[in-house]
Image (cartoon, rainbow, N blue to C red; front, side):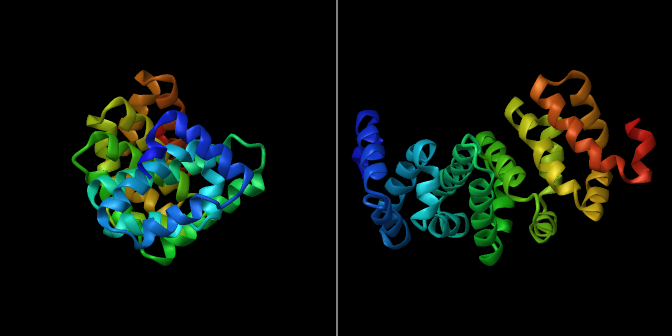
Length: 238
């Protein structure tokens, strides 16, 4: 497993996996599910590094269940690389012009998160000690919440709104970029949108529209759209 951390060896691993699907990834996902803690550390880092090239293959090799399991039971380090791998799997599929395949990947991850009640530990990463982990958790919520109202409500119930709003105010540039994306996904539910507004998100989003980076402006603008559907917020947003 450790050899896959070497860049040159990763190229060989990718080539081998493409030539013989599941040759290497299936044993890796088995180790991630059944291995020792040290083994899981090595495997989740390896999958993280391979996800840019083999994201779809990781999903097809039943990699999602053990990755989601790490969200519930893993160490802080394992949780970070598990979320990063899931996000990278999505990003890899988003680069491929195959909307059906992308929807299938997202659906697989959403279902596993929902079926194992992993939305609470994912939301809890918004309180992680690392700013990078917080930003990554926001990105994951932005990707995996849309289209699943039950997950949206579960994330809100798990306390996702408050740390996301705090990131708008006090976060790093990465957090200020990703937090509006997650808030957009949450605000698609009308009741959760009211919670977001009550938490003071609207003025902070407007500030990003005015003074943020190009990406922050775009994501903050998008987040304001569903919030503006509530008549209580319309005048403030105008």
